[in-house]
Structures are given as structure tokens and as C-alpha cells.
Length: 138
Image 1 (tube, helix red, strand yellow):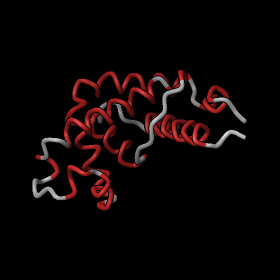
Image 2 (cartoon, rainbow, N blue to C red):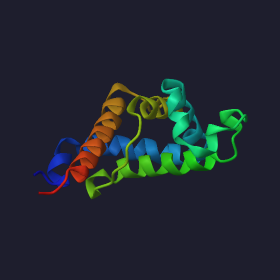
Image 3 (cartoon, rainbow, N blue to C red):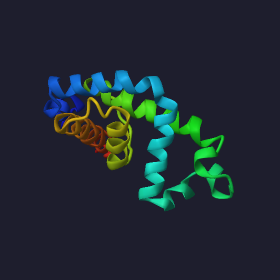
């Protein structure tokens, strides 16, 4: 069984630097970006709203829901901080496309094919870490 350290070997220092640089810009606006992130998830997979008890019977538009924004902010921060701390074993699961699109919109002046690959690799490594942790030990 691979360790998380072995699983993360494909996440290069250059990719880590791109992730850290863009996160340092984005975290100043984490509340708004977190909400955008969740709105993208719900746009891609509307049925995901059913997973949140505070959204099930709400008639309030998603972007105005008083419980969604703080939840979205905490998940977005945890996701990005985990990606930044990847070499130290951060882990969280999110929708990759929604995360990449949110980051692209948050830092368009920094966005590049290399940054997309870096964040994509960070996400993939997080998923690999989660899968490793979820495997039953025998």
C-alpha cells in the first residue's frame, strides 16, 4: 500500500508554487468564491442540493440562502488549504470541474494552462489520498 507521500510525488514543486500563489490571491475573497463554487456544483449537478438539509425545503434563491454562504466558504477554504498543504497530507473531496472554473474566474490574470494542470493535479492527489484512507485495512 502506498503512503500519501508516495502518492503525492507527481505533484511538483512548480505546481505547488502555482497553487499557493493563486490561493494567496483568492483567499481574500473566500466567502464569495465559496458561494460561486457551490453554485457551480449545483449548476452541474442540481440533485446535489438534496444533500443539504437547509436547502431541501427552502424557497430562498440559492445565492441568497443565509446558511449556504458560510457553509460554502468553509468548504472552499478547506478545499484550497488542503490543496496548498498537499505535501503535508491534506484531503477533501469536491467536484473538480467546479473547483477549476471557480479558480479560473477568481484569478483570471494568473490563470494559465500550467495553473489549470497544477490545480487539477492537486485535486487528483487529494482524491487519491481520500481513496487510500477509505480502503479497509486488512
